[in-house]
Length: 136
Image (cartoon, rainbow, N blue to C red):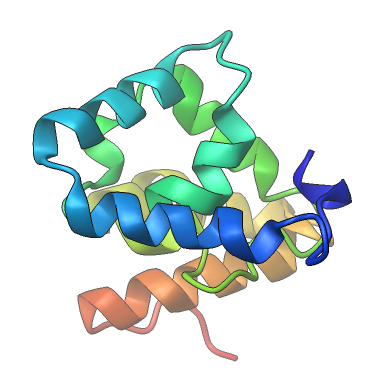
């Protein structure tokens, strides 16, 4: 859905909704967005992944179900999945433990575009953590 939504069709507007939700919805309502994302059969997952959840500043990877984590990691295999206004959800939410246990072990066997996307997510997370996880 996101791949076919052009600027003319409202991509910018939809993207700004995530910012609006983060700024004006209380934590209880934001938690409902996370709960929807954690549902394996949610038809809104990709939308939440790219346009809503990256704006939520108070969440970490600890709030995601294992199935949601698998969905996010699978998204890293898509070309340019990490380049958006707010960065990738993993870049914004990955804890140091998540980086160490889940992301860094993917590097040795990663092929493009996963490798490039992993590097960007690790750069984003490292910026938040005050660390450099990979050399550019």
